[in-house]
Amino acid sequence: MPLTASRPNWPDDAREQEWMRTIFGQRYDHANGRALAEIGDAGTCVMVIVSSTTLADGRIAVIVNASSTADNGEDLPGNGSPGILNVYLLERAAGGWTVRERHENLAAMGSKGHVGDACWVKLGPGKTGFVMSSSTSARGYSITLASIFVLDRGVRQLGELEEASDNIGACIPERACWDVGANLRFADDAQADGYADLLVDFKGKRYRAVENEYGEQVKQDEVLIRQSARYRFDGKEYVLVSGENAVPGL
Image (tube, rainbow, N blue to C red; front, top):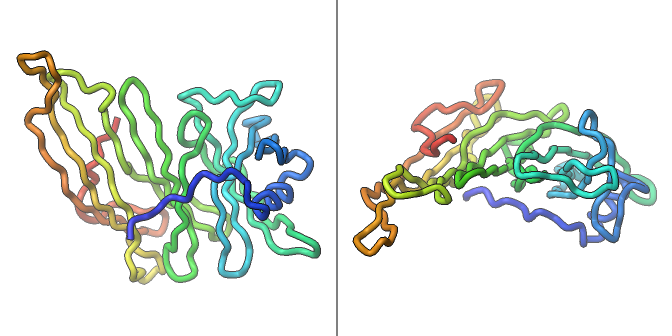
């Protein structure tokens, strides 16, 4: 099945509120569903939950987005400002929860201070991971990158690939235009190293925009894209082993 991203969470669930209080203590603002915290070189950031899952051993993995703030604590994310990815592992303790692992400032990705959408996946037997789909756009062009992470001896990034792109907002007459996206899924069977292949199906189109005699913009020379590709873990990251990535880079 194609990956389905978890919704960006407003922590209205009582459990998520409890987890955020466990992670950030007094810095968690229940009324606004966020916390203020110091994240490495990024300084003081607004912390908002993105997604969570229960691991096989009963621990809870929580993905939290960090975005830059002004001195008064207000959000300051511009279009070119990425979000900062953080992951916390919690487990049951007497009377509540305790934080067992903090993995902060893992990666800067996305735009407007948001790391993107998360999808929890099984990368193989006993291998829980997640895929972050982070988007950026500028001057009518946009691109989404899929970044693969595994929860194994901490949190490790296992590669990145183009998931979608378009130039719809910059598609003017006589310019080459496109709109291409992909569905990602992991194979049912893992390789000898325990990691399943990533299968990607691309769908979209390339075309040119021209004006007709009435001054209306119409599509010309439209070419439909239907391609597939396979990525395999090579011991360090997922690499392309067959097919090609049909998503144009920017």
